[in-house]
Image (cartoon, rainbow, N blue to C red; front, side):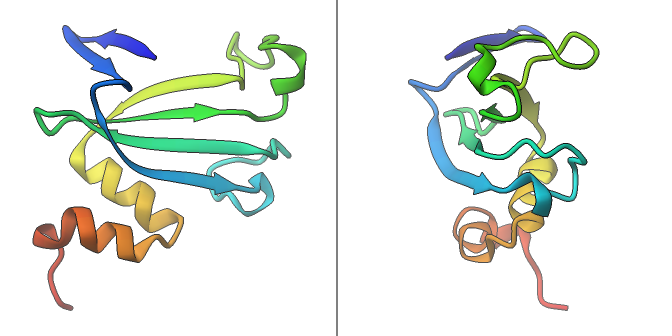
Length: 109
C-alpha cells in the first residue's frame, strides 16, 4: 500500500513493520463500535517516519461500504509522530515492543 501525505511517500513495501496489533473492539479504548477482527500495522520508514495501516472492522464483509462520515472500516492509513507511535504501543500494553523500538526514549520513573 502506498500513500502520499504532505509531500511524503509512505510505502508498506519499503517500510519496516514494527508490530501487528490484533484486537477486539470491545477492548479498544478508542472505539465504541463493535468492529471486531481489526488489525493495526505499525510501520517505520528509512527516514524514521511512522505510519499505521488499519484493516478489517465492522464493514469488512461489505467490501468497504461507507459507514459514518464517508469513512470505510476496510483500510485506513494514518501518518504518526514518534510520540503517537509510542502511545499506540502503550495503549495495547505492548511493552516489549515499546522497549525494543523506543528504549532510548523511555526513562525510569
